[in-house]
Length: 550
Image 1 (spheres, rainbow, N blue to C red):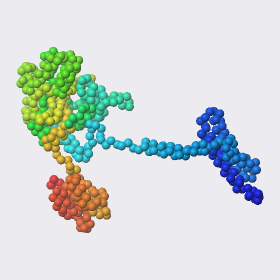
Image 2 (image 1 turned 45 degrees about the vertical axis):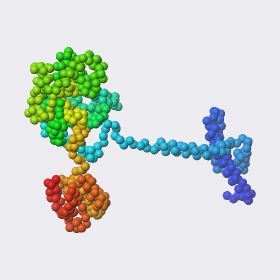
Image 3 (image 1 turned 90 degrees about the horizontal axis):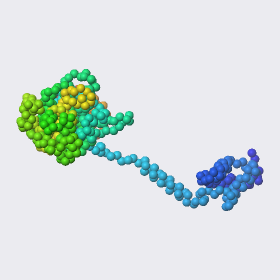
Image 4 (image 1 turned 180 degrees about the vertical axis):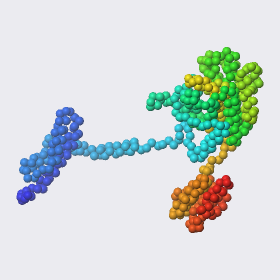
């Protein structure tokens, strides 16, 4: 299309008008947006203004005189003060750009702050432990000692869930365990708890078979147990516990077998009867004394729980509990005076020669002599154990120097199944925590070193192209029964030998170019420092010889 000379002349003016028209549209759009939250009449004006502004953005045709005039009028109206056109917010507030920038920076800073990660607390929950490799070697060693003893005595290993129904542990009020539970309501609305001990789980498992298990039953386990209790040396809120239990034997033969297993363990880890003793008593002793004092049988268990606390707190601290049971202070003082007897003969004078409790204890001590463990065993009438389900012989291993708390404990619990609605079944067992025994072994300086990772040979290729050979050598040695650590990255020989020494490896096998040309490797004895060449084809024979020299 041709444009006349007059049209060309006014073209710059028209372009300026278009530009002014669009600037006015922007101002109208901004102003109408800021007024959209006003009254309903203002909302209507705002909508109209938005439509007007959008229309102003539409391309204009220069060949239309009417539209050109209209553009000129709007531009003039928008740029004339008091002409009725809307004034942009930017023009009304000269600081709006500064304010907008400040708000943006503030929002960005807030977003950055909220998105920054919370610093991780690297400590495990209070009362619990991490087990680094060296700690795991110690734990594995201890568990192996326990398992070896249990298998030597013909016990079979079992396990159960760490999470149990809370009702399993709330048999009797007054037991410490009921106040020490890690308990909660799960997402299904069930009251559950982390197990504080293993015996109730064992009872549940036996009951679930409805008499289908052959008796006698000899089982052991090493569960992790949880109690929210005050922490002292050797006492944490979680611990592993060696349990050995015998079900189906009514006589003290079961207790004697369990005591012998305990002593066998102590002896296997380097402890003697000068280090550890085992106090023995019977709940029957307390029962006979309470009968003499006129205390009804249904209060025996609760009384035993309270008497057990007297070792830790003064009598005034449990006075209210005693009164609730109907026990006067005088009765308890008489009871505690009787329980200070430290020989079966002295107790026989109190209870008489016809006492069932005395007869039971005499039989047990005779069996202990037959086992050859009499030096470890002593009578102590004050030992009652804090769990209400014990019914007969009770025992407790202790540090003879008095530095540490009880090392292990157990006894007979013939009526435990009855508390769960089952039939009475004779049973006895013990629990043996990991934390206290480790402290005792450290105290006596008989705990082995666990610095060695148990690596027989470190295998190292001096050049990258020899790494496949190192892998083949490692596979050969592993097939021969060795524990082998392959250096997986390019390292200098000095680093490799230092690494082998740090993990206490016995040998370091180096694949070097010159030796490899002769189909050999160089093997260094890390203890003596001697280095010898070994044919690659003879590595299995070398490994067999190294095993016999351990």
